[in-house]
Image 1 (cartoon, rainbow, N blue to C red):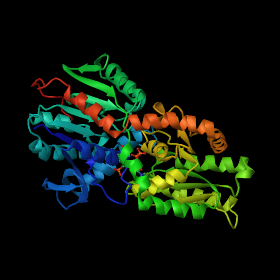
Image 2 (tube, helix red, strand yellow):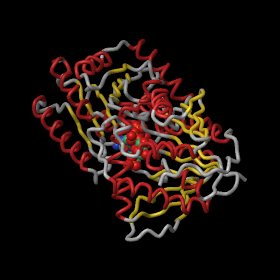
Image 3 (tube, protein in one colour):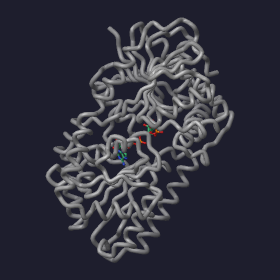
Image 4 (cartoon, protein in one colour):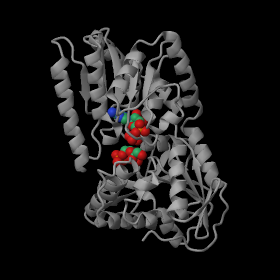
Length: 467
Ligand code: ADP
Ligand code: F6P
C-alpha cells in the first residue's frame, strides 16, 4: 500500500508542554489523520554521526529519527538554516550570514538525511519534504534513483529576487528544487517571487503553474496551511483550559487583556509591538489601570546570537515600559518567557479582548488562526494582524496593520478595544468560517493530492545536483 512519508528538520511527537512552532503542530495533525511516517532530526546530538534510525510511535503518529553530530547542528541548523536562510527568507539580509562552512554543512546533512530516507521509501510512496532546512534533499534522492513523486512545501516566505541574489550560490539552491514534482507556497506573493526568480535569474520558462528549467518541469502552487481546528477548539472543554480561565479571571479583575503569543524570534516584531503598545499608553490615559498586554514568548534557537540579542532587547523594553507606566496596583505588560500547553493557550486566547499578531514578515502565522478559533462567537475579541503575515491574505476581516508604524498599531488597538459588539461579531464570523474551512486537513489533502497528481514515474535523467 502506498504511504505518505513526511520529512521535516524537526520531528516532534505530541508533547504536553507545547512550544513546537507551527510546522510541527500542523504536521502532527496531518499525520494523525493520514497515517504514514514522519522522518527527520531527533533534535539530539551524538559525538559522531552514525545514520542509525530510531522508530517511535505516539498518539497514532509513527516517526523515524536520526541524531546529528555537533558540527552538523552548528553548520546546518544554527548555521545555514537559521543564520543564513531564515533571515534571508524573512527579508532580513542585514542579519544573514554567508559562510561557506554553513553551506557545506547544509549539503552534508541533506545527504546524510537522504541516505536512510531512500532505504525507507518504497515504490508508490508519496514523499513530502517540508521547509527551508531540506531544499536539496530531493536532488539527493533522485541521484540515488528514487523516482517517486516528491513534493516540497515552504513554510516561510520566499524572498524577492533582488534579495535572494545576495545569497552566494543561489542558483544552486534553486536548481536543486527542480528535483521536486510540486512546490507549495503559503501565499501568492511568495509564489510570484519564486516564479520571478526562475524566469529572470535562472532563465527557466513559466507556463501558468508549470516551471521548466533544463528539461525538468515542476508545478508551483499556493496552498496556505491551516490549524487543526476541531482538535484545537475541543481543548476549550479541558481542565487545563478551565484552570487558566479561572486564574486569568481572578488576576485580571476587570482589566481588558491584549494577548500576544509568539516564539521569541526577530521576525515576530516583538520590539515593534512593545513600542506600539507604549505609544498606545502614551496616547490613551484611559487605558492606564484598565488595559494589560500579556505577551507569551518562549525562547527559540538560543544558540544563535541574534535570538539572544532579541531576548535581551525585549527584557529591557518590557522593564523600561513597565517602569515608566506601572502603578502599585497595575503593571501594563506581563511578559512571559515560557511555553504553554494547547489547553492553556486556548484559554489565554479566549481571555484576550484583542489578539495582537504583528510579525514583520511571516510565512503564515498560525497564532492568528488559533486566536480566532478560540473566541466566543457571542462576544468575540478582535484580531489585529500584520499585513506582512502570510495569514493576512486569508484574513482580510482582521484589523490589518503595518507593524513598523507604532501610531497605526496603537490606533488599531484602540479601535479593537472600543469596537461595537455587532462589528466584532461580523468580523469574527467571517474569519472563523475561513479558519474552520481551510484547516490543516484541507491543506494536507490539497497538497498531497497535488503531489499524487504529478506524472510518474519521472523521466530518468538525473536531477541537477545540489552539491
Ligand atoms: P512559527 O512556526 O514561526 O513559530 P506560527 O504562528 O505559525 O509561528 O506557529 C506557532 C505555533 O506554536 C502555534 O501553533 C502556537 O500555538 C505554538 N506556540 C507559540 N508560542 C507558544 C507558547 N508559548 N506555548 C505553546 N505553544 C506556542
Ligand atoms: O516554519 C517555521 C519554523 O522554522 C518551523 O520549521 C519550525 O517548526 C518552527 O519555525 C520552530 O523553529 P525551530 O524548529 O527552529 O525551533
